[in-house]
Each structure stands twice: as C-alpha cells, then as structure tokens.
Image (cartoon, rainbow, N blue to C red; front, side, top):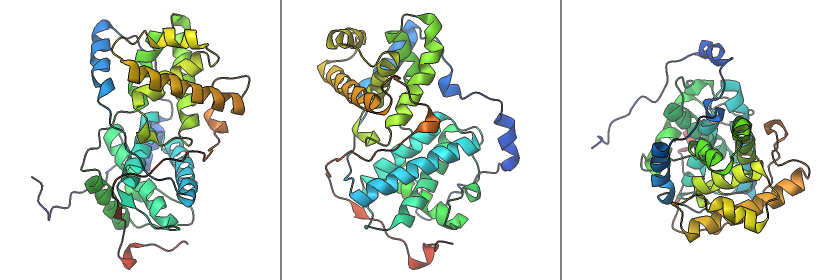
Length: 303
C-alpha cells in the first residue's frame, strides 16, 4: 500500500534534444501487421470488458473540451508522440470529468487538466516523455509543481487505473477482419486513424467501447456507404461479439456515415490537418462528482 506521505517524482529526465531523434520515425500505431489466429484470441478477450463512464457536457465545458482536444493534437505533433498517447490523454480527461465537478467558467482548470493528462499518457506510452516543464499553454504560465499536483489529483481520481485500452490496440485486428485486399490494408490503417481523430470531438470517449469505435471507423474508412446487409455481414465476422456489441457497432457506423457525408461527401477519411471539432454531443450526467478545488495560490493567472 502506498504511503499517504509519499510524493513520487513524476518528472521525466529527457530534454528537448530527444525530439530530433524521432523526426524520421513513423507512428507505430499506423504500421499494419498481420494478425494470426493466436492474436485473434488475445485481442478478442478484452473486447467485452471495457467500461463506459458518462459525464454531463455543459455548454461551456464542451467548448473547453474542444480547445483541449486541439491543444493535445497540436502538442502531440510538436513532441512527435504516438496517436494512442493523444487519445489516451483524452480518455483520462473524460474519465476525470465523470468524477470531478469543475465550476462553470474555470477554464484554467481544463487547461491544466489537459497538460496533466497528456503528460501522464506520455509516461504510459512513450519511450521518451517530455518533462512537464516543456508543456506550454498559450496565455497561461503553469509552474512545474502545479502541474505535478494536478497529475497526482488525476491519478488519485482515476484510482491509478491508467492502462485504458485505446482504439489503436484493435486497428490491425479489424483491418484484417474486414479487408480482404491485402494491398489496401496498410493504407486502411491510416485512413481509419484519421476517422477516429475526426470524431473525437463529437463523442464522449468513455461512453463508447474502444473496440466499437475502431470497428466502425475501419468500416467507414473501408466504405462509408455500406448497405445494412453489407454492414451486418462484415460485423458478423467478429465471432466473439454478441448482439449488443454488433448493434453498437452498427449504430456507431451510421453515426459516422452522417458525419463523414456532412463533412466530406466524396471521402470517407478526413485528413488530420483539416480536423474540425463539432460540439454536438449531449450526454446525461450520472453518479456523484466531487468539486475540483485548488488553493488560491495554485492557480496561475493568464499571462
């Protein structure tokens, strides 16, 4: 059991010189590899064990979350982090907001929460995570000890359960399941990733299973005009799924159809550099939340 007085050092020792070392590396989340029968068993086991959380997306909070998504995507590109690192940080944010109540208008709380969640996600996923002092938010000057305090609050709020499954864990599996054209599979991995990052601003990530998001995104990237019969035939290829998982995937695919048709009528995949955040989700609030409070001295005024 951890001592209550323990204060683990969450800072990383890498410096900015590590950025250049990955400049030529390809994001490993987007590298297709074949899936064997043994891999199928390994991947299918956790498909039914993902837990969904809900949080109330108030109007100001939806805007703040959209800004957080943009900042995370921009910072991911700057630090050359993996796709799954950015996505994992957003899972942390949504899980945190399901348990903590942030008073209306306290935008600085969302800003520092974004920094803390991306920093923690990087420590979980990256070989070299940038020190927290390297994370900059325009208009704010968060000190390292303040960010570290927020990291600890996130860890405690999420009960140190930080190893959430992201959709990128299932990309190769579903690409192999749904695409018979081996020459297209590598391209399809990238296209599906673009679909995933197109819709993250539209949904509460923890309301949907990662496997469902991946399956629907791969199908949408493969062909976002599948008929119901064609869609059902593809989904039936996932033998481990019951009617509930199949129904959720079908519904999510239909949602993607509407979104992709609205955004790009001639293309199923939207490049990340044209990402538009649409705040349209209205989720219901359940459970009891604790109010997020800092001492007055912890808040850094906008510069």
